[in-house]
Image (cartoon, rainbow, N blue to C red; front, side, top):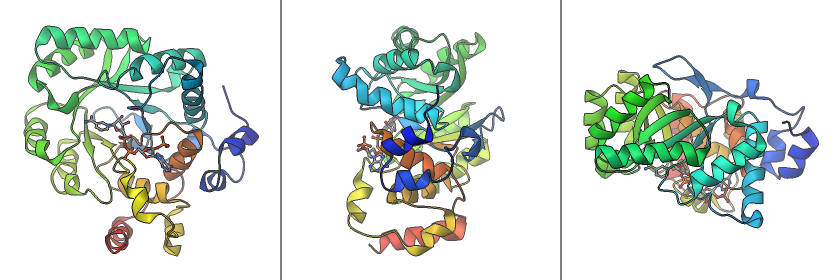
Length: 301
Ligand SMILES: NC(=O)c1ccc[n+]([C@@H]2O[C@H](COP(=O)([O-])OP(=O)(O)OC[C@H]3O[C@@H](n4cnc5c(N)ncnc54)[C@H](OP(=O)(O)O)[C@@H]3O)[C@@H](O)[C@H]2O)c1
């Protein structure tokens, strides 16, 4: 299943179309990072689906188009959770319909207390996602972590999960996250990190590097908060030094420019935003000095 360059350009607008100038880009051109526990490489930009809901064709059509665009442009990592309403069901249905399961890296979560209810929720995810293998299963917001990790390890040994991890999206849980990172063998952690929310870079990211744990970054746009700060403002000219053509790419390149970050998972339900966001996984990424300059620029807005 491939979109032609014309299809992509039709979907793309502004920066997204600009990012596609030249022949249609393929997965091979996306910047990738290795999962430390396996060496498997993933494109540094994925997609978050916490707002994927619906049952009617009118609700599903734009989501289908968004996923189709994501896969056609080489995207791999999709993050969901049973807590996100019908997100897993919608994804299962659309991914099966599009026939794209094989090229994707599916990450979901469990939010439960107790062994039985956790195991039941994890089993249900396979049905909802219509798959017999989940690439990454994560303890959602550190809920009953030790119990759920034990079940996940059994599932990993049985080949049902390829990787296991834990998530948070708030500073209040960082202390617990640090303790888990130090005491448990994990493949992944997922944490909130963005140019205006940098605490993870002080506490979680260095520890993940040291423990050789892959990092998924949630809320890279601060739930779209970042876009309000720059509305009507032009990108600084020096953004072209790291091949950045839109504010979304500025924010994502900042995040994935951090050496501990494996994949950022911006949430979107729009094909043109998928193309814009995947543009952040193309070309150069900012180095440490450039990232510092980005922080100073943003802080002065
Ligand atoms: N504790 C946890 O485990 C946890 C917590 C929170 C989130 N998450 C995960 O992280 C993912 C991302 O978080 P999020 O979606 O809440 O926040 P986010 O990624 O920081 O921001 C999403 C918002 O940005 C907009 N957007 C996306 N691309 C854009 C672009 N190129 N230009 C302009 N606007 C753009 C989206 O609107 P459009 O739809 O219009 O593009 C949406 O309003 C979630 O989907 C979920 O998978 C996990």
